[in-house]
Length: 411
Image 1: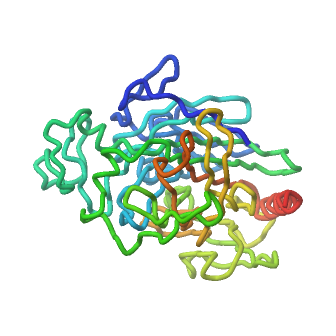
Image 2 (image 1 turned 180 degrees about the horizontal axis):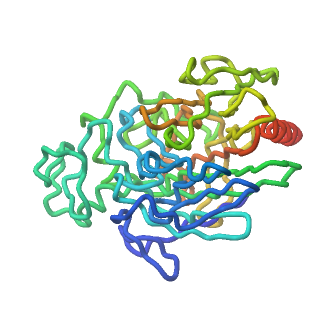
């Protein structure tokens, strides 16, 4: 498998070398602006180039945009992020940007059936675990109101820091992602969109990661890994504060409950049997705790042939099984792939907040090794693919069955 080559940076803290446009890592913008749309049958999604290509629009027939004001924020939307246990979940490269108004502007390439978020540096989210790491607020304010606008708690002298706030939030990771219309692919007969994405540990540990080093309030030494790799790369890679230990990738869509509040959830046993439950009665679905498949459907009706429904599917594919890859930077080829998954969970919360639901997947991966410990020219990345569908529950179940057969045939 080939990967699009990581775009070169014009300067240490510049933006994308797109040939035409250079962006700062974060820029003030409106998270409700949709810049690109992708259609799949009766479903339309919209994404914004102002915030890392995150989904900020989901249009379904008869209802309109089910995301609306409650989910149209950079900290919500439909997006992914990563954290890790050793850094207390506070070193948090996020697709969208730094806070609700400071997004990571990105280049989006559109073809007839695909939207591509070109490789782009990730900003850190603002440390909603309660860790103020930004002394500088020259681009925009952080959420910490008692810091005088020019202080933090990472114990680094950043008085004369080159790049100021941009240097503080510019993580060691790049994001790359695609959204693909899969209606008709493999015989799928209802609206289906595949989202593939990568978080690439492309930069050597620098000032950004150093703000979360061992000895700071953000770091949790007991969560260091005894050995990050499983089979590859060969050898023992004891975790350090410059690696990702106990990586927690998360992907979700969210919706405004005032616009759409489906009452039913369909879940599937490991033997493929569908079960129906009330979302009101069981507000949180976790596939791992209930030994269920990583699929679920939220729907308006218990009748599988009636009403609007959206389905979520994380396939047992090679990509998801070997979710950590070593990449040859020169040509984008895969140097190795490793299965480091410790937990994988389908997760759905009807009331993530009183006004918004959360629907998606969350995992725990042993970790990622920083590139200074790898062969020259190789970096590690986390990758994932998920599908989401629109239709009646039965149409979605049929589409998932098609994919089950497709991925089974690839094993």
